[in-house]
Each structure stands twice: as structure tokens, then as C-alpha cells.
Image 1 (cartoon, rainbow, N blue to C red):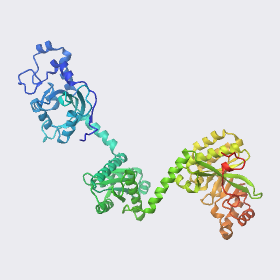
Image 2: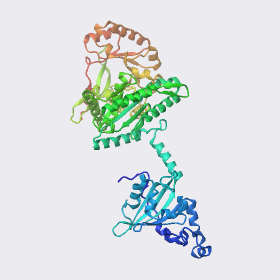
Image 3: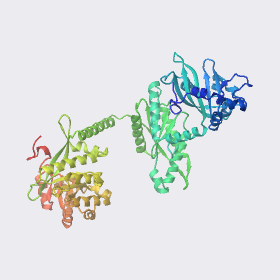
Image 4: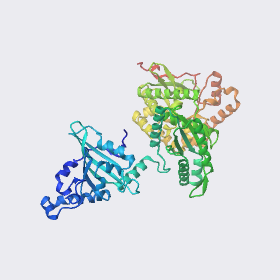
Length: 614
């Protein structure tokens, strides 16, 4: 049976029976059936008898327990009789202790939904017996005036169950404490830990936990459920126009609108900044569409009052069926997001159901496979350096070599960079790749002091101070190495944050490196920016070089670029040169360096002439 883990715990406590026996004169426990005139909790003994029976400190124990809203009891399970401390009626708020004289009487005043919780904790045995007893601690709701009355208390009951020789509970000794204030504070803290502060709905952690639970239930019972991913449209526009505070008000209002129109048992949680997840129980494909389109309509037709003005919002929804279309939480989230993208691509304020796409799934599996391969290759040092010559246009001899990357699979086959670099950049792995290329390039430069190298860095690395630190550490700051290195930054990365790029270039120049703008012409860099960046070279994007003889516009571009480069004293590199005709055109245009298969294909560094083979 299930026990609420938040309210039931088992811990070591002092035996209440020992406590009662040690302080019997003070606590005066008696059977609830004892005549009211006897010495029990109903009437204190004469002062003289009390003084003779125990010291004053023991007589004050009942008062101390009452002050902290605690009482003690011993429950004989065979007779079902309960002996209470003298303050029990006062602490528990009952008219008379006779109303809780038996286990059945006391149980009657406990909230029905907590009967099983208390029984599992107190009567267990819920743990391994320890010297013939089992400790317990449990919380439950108690109605002193009966279940039909409005008032109730939250009690914490802790103590131990004494077992007989057969391991069955025989006697229960415990202490009960009223914990109303603490309970509600705990509930408030639990609510804060479970719910998103802005929207008041489940936070992302609890939403995914609820999604996991409904998936497990759907698998077990074969009853279909669904998961909806809801996005509030145009939040960026609202934030820009009215401020983030108003945007937050809109998000909170949409969450409340959605919650108000959910069934009991359904769940709503905030997934991300402008997205909410909805779990609908017992919901098939038709019902999912009806529910989603109803929510879209309700949100659209509801006016939202904000601090700025009255606004309206729209939502887009993507839905997935559980467990038919997703058997795990990541699958459910991923498929719902895919459906949401489809809904937003059609138009705002709409719904789309997830539909499996063979080509999309194949591409996703391929991407996962490539990502795993890249990470494994980095961890197992299977990333290899390849070099392609960049020749001097006049002499056609290599002036320096561009460092490229190859990935070696476990079976020894080689994968070119174009097959994994684009995806690796999307997955945020480019910094690790750039660091590995730097390590390989510096090692090669140390072993070949006559060779100059150029190293590409991604847009992420061009703002990464740690990469610069690694460059200085690997080279030891020796200019004999750094002066033979050219660092290539893509044009789009250079202009994305010009101030950061300027600082990056300046640091490289201070270390002794040269700097080139790669893929020039593919972005929107002005020649003024070239001067501001203080680069040494521009590499013209290969798309302008390929088929140059048949494209007059590109010929004009090349001529203009060369003239301005000469004005700024910049060297130029033409990429993708594939034939003699193009090479001669580059020479006539004044291009200083050329690169392409016509002058040499990339060669693995460990096969480079003069480098010892492994």
C-alpha cells in the first residue's frame, strides 16, 4: 500500500512507554474506563500526595507538554484501550478524554483519507524490528468535534510499536503534537518547490514527473492520454511594447485561463519562458483536438487586464498521444514540440497533432549517431589534423597550410569535417572541437618549425577567453610559434558582436598571431569594419570563385575587393580554385594567395612529408 513519503517517516525516538513509566506520578496515565473520581487525567491528586509521589520538576512535565501542545499515550491493541496523559483532552481539543478512550474512537476522528496512512505507520510493521519494536512518525488531520465539524487540527504522531514474540504489534506508545502552524508552512514551502512562481502552475520538474506518471499508468492500463505543448504567441512583441512586467502578467493570466478550463485530474505546468504543458487523462485523438481548439478559442476571446492596458493573447498548441506516439518523457516532450512547431508554421493561434515522419525520424537518429561519434572521438583522441596548402599566387608554392579536421572511426575509416562539423556546432560542441584543433596544430607547429599554419575558429570560440588562455598555455607565449599561426574568423562571427571581435583580434595580435576573415563576401562586413578589426588577410568565399569565368558580376566583385584590400594593405586568398583558368584569372586580378583542390587536397598531418609515422 502507498504511504505519503512527505508525511510519514521512520526515525529513532525515545520509548514513550519508558518515558511514561519513569514519570508516572507526573503524567498519571490510566485506563480511559477508570471511574472519573479516581486519580487520573480527569482530576489532579491532592497537593500533599503529589509532593510525596514526585519532585516538583516531574509535576511540571504535564504543564510543559501542554505548553508545547504535546500529549502522550499508550495503546493496548488487544483490548483497544488507550491510556492518555492528563492533558490529552486539552491538547487535542476534545470535550472529554472518554471520546478517545479506544483506538476505534480515536480513529473515528481522523480524516478518512488519512486512515491508511496512519495504520501503515503505526501498526506496520513498516520497518525492520529493532529489539522487538518499530519506530514510526506520521502526520494526519484530526477533527476534535467529529468529522462533520469545520474545525480540524494537524497532528504529528511519533513513537514505537512494541511487538510480541511473533513480530505482531502488541502495544503502541507515542507522543502526539499539534503542528498546525508548521504543517501549513511546510505546505507553503512544498507548493513553492513544486510550482512555478509566476504562473502558479507546476514547475518544469514536477510537470515532467507528472508526465512520467501518466505514461506509466497509460502503459499499464492501456488507456490513452495526451500531452499538449502550448506556446503564448508574440511574447517578444508584448515584452518590447509594454515591458517584461506586463509580459509576465499576460503569461500568468493565460496560465489561469487554461487551468480554469481543465478537468479535475488533468495537470498544467510551465515548461519554459512562454510554453506550458498540459496533461489530459483518458483522452483520445478526437478529444485531444476538441480540447486544444477549445483552449485556443477561449484564450483568444478573453481580455486580459494588465497594469498597462487591456490586452488579448493567442496560443499555438501541439499535441501527442500517450503511449501510442511516445513511450518516454523525452519522446513525449520532443514530439509535442515538433507538433507545436508545425502549428506555428501554419499560422499562429492554431493546433497541430503529432504525425510521425519517417524522413525526420531517420535524420534525428542520424544526428544522434553523429553526435555520439563526435563525443567519443574527442574522448578517445580520434580527431586527426589534416593540412591543405595555401599557395603564393606568384610562385605557386605553399605559403602556409590550413588546419582541417578529420574524425577517425573505431574501424579506422576517416570522416571529413563537412559530415559532422555543422551538426556539432548546432549541438554546442564546436568549442571542444576548436580546442582539439588548437592542440593538434600547436603540436604540429612545434615539430615542424619551418611550417606556417592557419586555424579556423567558430563563432563561439571567437568570444571565448578560455581559448585564448589555452593558446598562450600551449605555445608558452613563444613568438617563434605564434608568429607562424594565422587565426581565421568567419565574417558572420566577426560582425555579430564587433566590440568582442575587436578585443579577440587585438589579443591575438599581441600574442604574435596573424588574423584572417574567412568566407568574406558571405556576410555583410563593410570595408570600414575590416579596418576597425585590424585583420591581416581576407579569404574570399569560394562561392564567388567557383565558375568565375562565366559570372561577370563575381569578376567585378573580385576586382573591387582586391583594390580596396591593397588600399588597406591586406593580403587576399581565393578559395575553391579548381582549374588553371581560374588560377590565372586570380593572378591577373591581383589575388595574393590561392587555395583549392587544383593546388592540393587536404593531407593527414601524420602522413605529411618529414613527420615521423606512428
